[in-house]
Image (cartoon, one colour):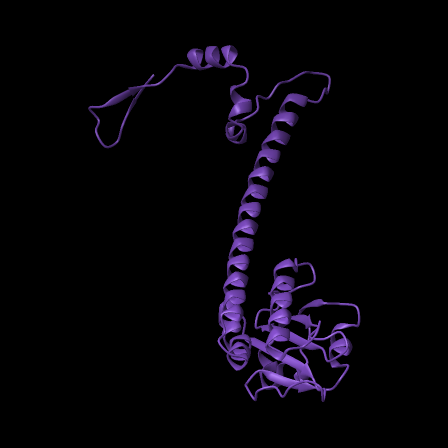
Length: 239
C-alpha cells in the first residue's frame, strides 16, 4: 500500500498491508495493551453466533473503549485540580511573606485588609477584632472592624476554626459596606490570646462557589496561624 502526501505528490510512503499488520499484532500480542488509545478508535467485529447468543466480544471491546474515555477524562480533571492547588499554594505563600515582611504593625494590618484581597483574588479582605479593654487600640483602617465580645463564636460556632460558605448571605458586621460584593466567604478564627479577645479574618468573593464547604482548608489554616502568631508578637500578647 502506498500513500502520497498532499504537499509533495512526488514523495510517497509505503504503508504496511493488512496482512503485515495482522502478522505484527500476532507476533506482539501486548501491543494494544501498551497503546490503549487505539482501542478507543477501533471498531469491534460483528459476529453472528446464531440462536440468539450474545456477542460478548463486541460488548467487551465497547466497554473497554468507554473505560479508556473515562480514564482520559479523569486524567484531565486530575491535572486541572493539581494546577489549581499549585496556584492556590503560591498565592498563600505570597500572602504569608507579605505579612511577615511588614515593617510595622500598622503596615501589617494594611497588608491584611488591602493587599491580601489582590493577592488571593477576592473582592474583600476584612479583619474583625472583638473589643477588649486589655487589647491595644487597633488602627483606624479600612477593613478593620471592632466587634462585640463573643461575635466570633456567634458567627463561626464555638468549636470551628475555619468556615467556608457558598451562596450564603454575608454578615454586615464582618464585611461592612462591602457586604454587597460578597457571594461566598471564608472565615478564619484568630485566637490572639487564650484569655483575651478573638479575632476573625474574612475573605469575601464575588463568585458564589469560590469558597464552599467541600474545599480543603490546609492552606487557609496555615495563613491564619501565621497571622495569629505575627499579631501576638506585634501586640506582645501571651499565647
